[in-house]
Every structure is written in structure tokens, then in C-alpha cells.
Amino acid sequence: MSPTIDYDAPTPPYQQIAAEVIRDIKAGVLAVDRPIPSESALIQRWGVARDTARRAVRHLRELGYVYTVPQRGTYVAERGEDERQAD
Image (tube, rainbow, N blue to C red; front, side, top):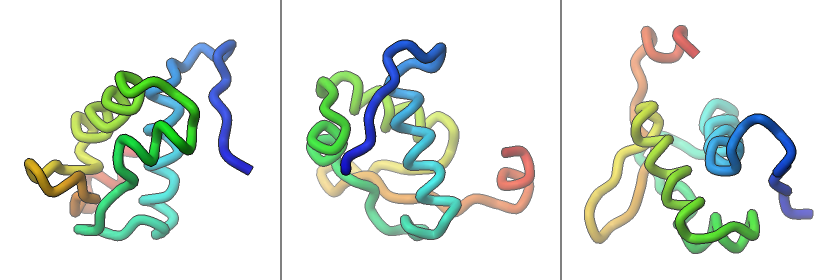
């Protein structure tokens, strides 16, 4: 069963997707320096528009959870102890 977006929630869809990716990172499902699902995979999994998937990835990057290598993909970032405690 694929996850669903709660369009009635106060949290925007891109933040809901980002929160799910963050949960996977914290649970160890997505490891440091390993790729996160591509925008296309996020679109397919969540049934959202490309812009929503891009905003989710941008949000993750702004929060410091991922980094992007041009023409390679987006990967889980190493986070210091201070950053983990701030969550």
C-alpha cells in the first residue's frame, strides 16, 4: 500500500513527503551517502505533481538531511550530533 497525502492537514504535501523521508533516514532505512528515492519515484509513490516532489527534496536539502550531486542524484547527508539533537 502506498502512502497517501492528507490534503486537509495543515502541513503542505511537500512537507508530508519530506517528513516520511526523514523518518526513513532516522530509522536507518536510508543510509548516509546513499541515494534517496528520485523525484520520479516520489511522484509515483505519492501520486503528486513533479513540483511537489521537487519542493520536498528542496525542503530536505534546506533542513540538511540530504545533499545533491548534479547529474548524479540526491543523497543522505551526514548529520552531526548537534543537528540530531535539535530534531
